[in-house]
Length: 277
Ligand SMILES: [Zn+2]
Ligand SMILES: [Zn+2]
Image (cartoon, rainbow, N blue to C red; front, top):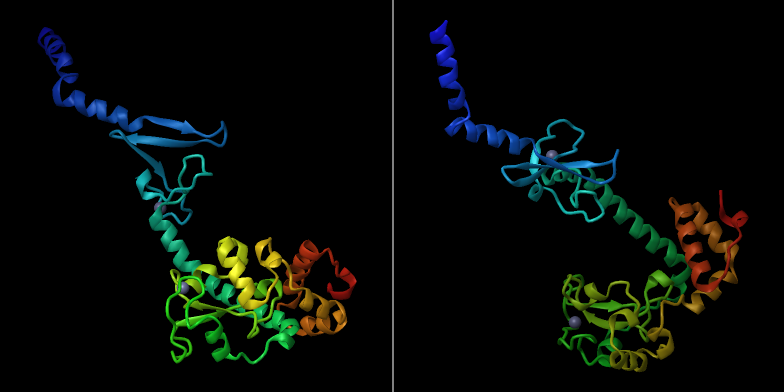
């Protein structure tokens, strides 16, 4: 009995010393966390050996694992400053949903172009590419890169920009087109995209663009304006265009967007009973 008592006394301090103490300390660190966000909706940032971790919120069950914050994409609006699910889970999710989303965007883009074309097409002409190249001296209007008029179509060597975007119902014509270098992200046409000229060119460029295209300097220097000609074509024959759009798949969504745009930029309101189903 005495021997047992002595043994316990001797072994007690040993429990807290050396390796054992370090393991204990680590366990304590592992448990430490801070709460971020408001009470009720807070999230925990855990510290594993001094490194901030959080749980992945992936609902599919393969996570959630406590992972270092560096494995989460940043999202400044989130309480933790990071996405709820980890990059790995996000990638899996994106792979599963993106093909559809991309396809939808493409279909939507081409539908809009086609339906918008019903009202602008009458104004699109067969382009005189030679005349456009001559006017721009065979150079990209924005960066002065020499462009080859004989380049294969679709090679991305050059693009004819609407100058004022089709998004605002401006047609593509020989007189008003801008010659730009190709499509890629760092090529001028890719960079300009649907931007209004004033959002893309400086004042000097705008002046010369106005001279080259005959578009009023005031129009291209200000904010986006809808093409007055096309708007006039539409308003003078509203029923005809609406009945064409109504027959098209996606026509309702298209009209909702275009008529909201028309109202915002011109104040013209298309009565709901004319088009809404
Ligand atoms: Zn995950
Ligand atoms: Zn260029």
